[in-house]
Amino acid sequence: MAVKEQWTYITENQPKIALNHFVSTEHLSTSTVEALIKRTLQIKNMPQSEYPQVKGSWVSNLFLEPSTRTHLSFQVAERHLGMEVLEFDPSTSSLKKGETMSDTVLTLQALGVETVVIRSGEEKYYEALINNKDLNVSVVNGGDGSGQHPSQSLLDVTTIYEEFGYFKGLKIAISGDLSHSRVAHSNAELLWRLGAELYFCGPEAWYEESYDKYGTFVELDDVLEELDVLMLLRVQHERHDDPNAELLKETYHYRHGLTEDRERRMADQAIIMHPAPVNRDVEIADSLVTCERSRIYRQMQNGMFARMAILEAIQNGRGLKENVYALSEKY
Ligand code: CP
Image (cartoon, rainbow, N blue to C red):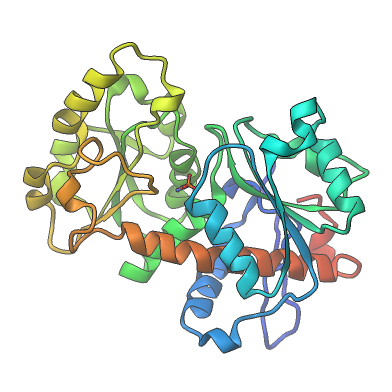
């Protein structure tokens, strides 16, 4: 699918980002990403009383897979923006009776909902919604199976930019469950595009060739001292069908995880990231989760501001649909 431009200038003096949907980093131009990073940090650094407002706009959060961070930080972001939030419980909804996602979103649209935030185990579920000519609802992807997690990517690149102020030449290792990780899929392409030098680490069986174009598969121990960022991935036990899962947990840490010994070998400026939830003593030693170089909880905090920037951009897009050339594109 072609990458399409998704932002424009609302006025000459005040550039604002306008999006129709936010479903995949691959649909975002680099200038859009840079603008979203800057807007996220702008919102983070403003007093709460000056937060942008999109009052009166209805949004619904449909989380069909478990989530703490993404779900709750979207909720908080929506409330900070003054949005009307219609919560949706899949376990008591008519999805249980076989209603499709498209018909569910059509129903929400009939009730006045303009934006849906969706997490689903189905990869690219959003294409059916975006291509449905009866739907005029903006879709924000909160994670689709092993596909994409674009709002996680925005908070991750914002956290890196906040730390270093640039991307070009930063040495970043993405380490762990690469084949199952939507975080890795969205971050690899985006960080490569922003100019980072990428390494991929972890069990070779969990590597996939699609990463070849973005970086090099290496042993973590061979690059550890050179890294600026070590981005650990959660071992997604729920997506593995491995009879030796318990053994895997025990051996993974010493073979591939961040042990205290490995942390001591990292460069002074290097930071540790993890999208969480963390499997303590698997991907990372329990004692390191909140250590000085860990940015794990800053990532979560930045997630709230990133999601405010995304929802603001969606609202800008909805407000301008009639007269902005860039928004005549589907995405
Ligand atoms: N990082 C992340 O997506 O966490 P949740 O699954 O808790 O939303």
